[in-house]
Length: 240
Image 1 (cartoon, rainbow, N blue to C red):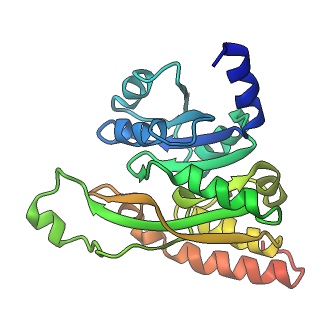
Image 2: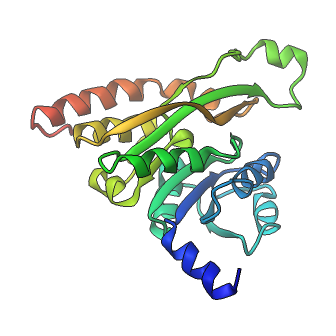
């Protein structure tokens, strides 16, 4: 195919912005990036936001340049990193991947097919499966629960969302340290966004000793505050 014909074809295919927020993830980042580069859906841009890492996260990301766009910012948390990635994104659709997790090779293609078939659909999710990171010892594995089954994943790493639909909801809230996506999705439902969970595996969540959910277990009170804020919003009251 001639170069001009290829460019014309790609321009007709929606661009998907794949955004990775990374904080001290040198051990896992290359696997995450490669799982995006291996997508059967080809019109992708990959943006890595380094959220103040002190390890070799930058060096790992730059190995993939120029296919990967790398940006550094002082540590501000996942929400701030996701928001920075969105500000830099050019895509018609947004997708997110944690720097220690993986997408299946056909994640985006499967989700785009579903969204193309339904103009009213704002968000496509899918199934997710957990796995033990290879470096874990048997003793460490026994401390972490890893179900064998795939489960419906309503999460950032399983989501593909239309650009205009995201901005109907607004930015991720930087006040939260845990449950950031839960808060955003509560607001998405309040806005009437329509979502669908594909009955197919789209992502794999890595279990290791520094998972965000493990490190921030003491932040569970945030969920109560999120639900209270959602209730206030639905009643037309100021949640603050």
